[in-house]
Image (tube, rainbow, N blue to C red; front, side):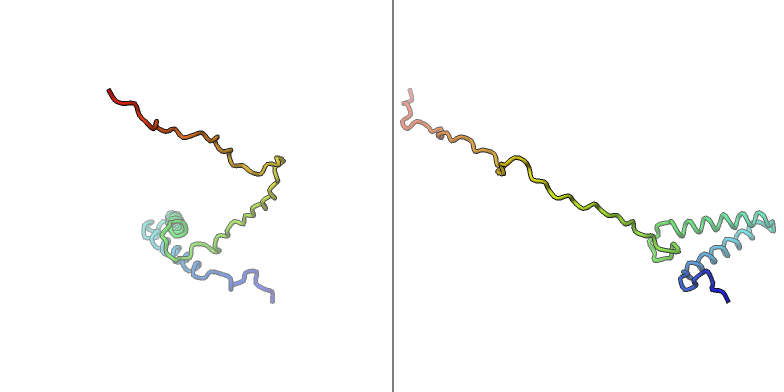
Length: 116
Protein backbone atom coordinates (compact mmCIF):
# COMPACT_ATOMS: atom_id res chain seq x y z
CA UNK A 1 0.00 0.00 0.00
CA UNK A 2 1.40 3.40 -0.96
CA UNK A 3 1.44 6.45 1.29
CA UNK A 4 -1.07 9.15 0.65
CA UNK A 5 0.52 12.33 -0.79
CA UNK A 6 -1.67 14.50 1.45
CA UNK A 7 -1.13 14.53 5.19
CA UNK A 8 -4.72 14.57 6.46
CA UNK A 9 -3.60 15.65 9.92
CA UNK A 10 -2.50 19.03 8.54
CA UNK A 11 -5.79 19.76 6.75
CA UNK A 12 -7.81 22.61 8.24
CA UNK A 13 -11.10 20.70 8.33
CA UNK A 14 -13.15 23.64 9.57
CA UNK A 15 -12.05 25.63 6.52
CA UNK A 16 -12.98 22.73 4.22
CA UNK A 17 -16.42 22.40 5.84
CA UNK A 18 -17.07 26.14 5.56
CA UNK A 19 -16.14 26.16 1.87
CA UNK A 20 -18.28 23.08 1.22
CA UNK A 21 -21.18 24.81 2.97
CA UNK A 22 -20.67 27.87 0.74
CA UNK A 23 -20.75 25.66 -2.36
CA UNK A 24 -23.90 23.87 -1.19
CA UNK A 25 -25.76 27.11 -0.45
CA UNK A 26 -24.56 28.77 -3.67
CA UNK A 27 -25.64 25.74 -5.73
CA UNK A 28 -29.00 25.56 -3.99
CA UNK A 29 -29.72 29.24 -4.63
CA UNK A 30 -28.45 29.02 -8.23
CA UNK A 31 -30.68 26.01 -8.98
CA UNK A 32 -33.71 27.84 -7.60
CA UNK A 33 -32.94 30.95 -9.68
CA UNK A 34 -32.11 29.09 -12.92
CA UNK A 35 -35.49 27.29 -13.25
CA UNK A 36 -33.97 24.00 -14.47
CA UNK A 37 -31.41 25.45 -16.86
CA UNK A 38 -28.26 23.55 -15.94
CA UNK A 39 -25.69 25.85 -17.55
CA UNK A 40 -27.22 28.95 -15.99
CA UNK A 41 -27.35 27.15 -12.64
CA UNK A 42 -23.67 26.25 -12.88
CA UNK A 43 -22.68 29.82 -13.77
CA UNK A 44 -24.79 31.29 -10.98
CA UNK A 45 -23.38 28.74 -8.54
CA UNK A 46 -19.82 29.69 -9.45
CA UNK A 47 -20.55 33.42 -9.15
CA UNK A 48 -22.32 33.04 -5.81
CA UNK A 49 -19.52 30.86 -4.44
CA UNK A 50 -16.88 33.34 -5.58
CA UNK A 51 -18.77 36.18 -3.88
CA UNK A 52 -19.14 34.21 -0.64
CA UNK A 53 -15.50 33.13 -0.70
CA UNK A 54 -14.21 36.68 -1.25
CA UNK A 55 -16.49 38.00 1.48
CA UNK A 56 -15.41 35.32 3.95
CA UNK A 57 -11.70 35.53 3.18
CA UNK A 58 -11.07 39.22 2.56
CA UNK A 59 -13.79 41.22 4.31
CA UNK A 60 -12.43 42.64 7.60
CA UNK A 61 -15.18 41.28 9.86
CA UNK A 62 -12.78 40.90 12.84
CA UNK A 63 -14.20 37.56 13.90
CA UNK A 64 -12.07 34.54 14.80
CA UNK A 65 -12.94 32.68 11.61
CA UNK A 66 -10.66 30.52 9.49
CA UNK A 67 -9.74 32.68 6.53
CA UNK A 68 -6.87 30.81 4.89
CA UNK A 69 -5.34 27.38 4.71
CA UNK A 70 -2.15 28.62 6.33
CA UNK A 71 -1.59 31.77 8.34
CA UNK A 72 0.34 34.47 6.50
CA UNK A 73 4.04 34.31 7.13
CA UNK A 74 5.69 37.38 8.53
CA UNK A 75 8.32 38.83 6.27
CA UNK A 76 11.74 38.15 7.66
CA UNK A 77 13.85 41.25 7.41
CA UNK A 78 17.39 41.44 8.57
CA UNK A 79 18.81 44.88 9.12
CA UNK A 80 22.48 45.27 8.37
CA UNK A 81 24.68 45.54 11.41
CA UNK A 82 25.58 49.15 12.15
CA UNK A 83 29.13 50.04 11.25
CA UNK A 84 31.51 50.99 14.02
CA UNK A 85 31.67 54.76 14.38
CA UNK A 86 34.82 56.31 13.00
CA UNK A 87 36.85 58.79 15.00
CA UNK A 88 37.15 62.26 13.50
CA UNK A 89 40.55 63.37 12.25
CA UNK A 90 40.26 66.65 14.15
CA UNK A 91 42.04 66.26 17.51
CA UNK A 92 39.72 68.79 19.22
CA UNK A 93 37.11 66.92 21.20
CA UNK A 94 35.48 69.90 22.92
CA UNK A 95 32.60 71.11 20.75
CA UNK A 96 31.15 73.73 23.09
CA UNK A 97 31.08 77.24 21.65
CA UNK A 98 33.56 79.71 23.05
CA UNK A 99 32.31 81.97 25.82
CA UNK A 100 31.43 85.56 24.93
CA UNK A 101 34.03 88.10 26.06
CA UNK A 102 33.23 89.57 29.44
CA UNK A 103 32.26 93.26 29.38
CA UNK A 104 31.48 95.44 32.36
CA UNK A 105 27.76 95.70 33.07
CA UNK A 106 26.09 98.95 32.10
CA UNK A 107 25.10 100.83 35.27
CA UNK A 108 23.32 104.09 35.88
CA UNK A 109 25.49 106.97 37.11
CA UNK A 110 25.74 107.16 40.89
CA UNK A 111 24.62 110.86 41.07
CA UNK A 112 22.08 111.77 38.47
CA UNK A 113 22.05 115.42 37.34
CA UNK A 114 19.39 117.62 39.01
CA UNK A 115 16.18 118.08 37.14
CA UNK A 116 15.38 121.68 36.00
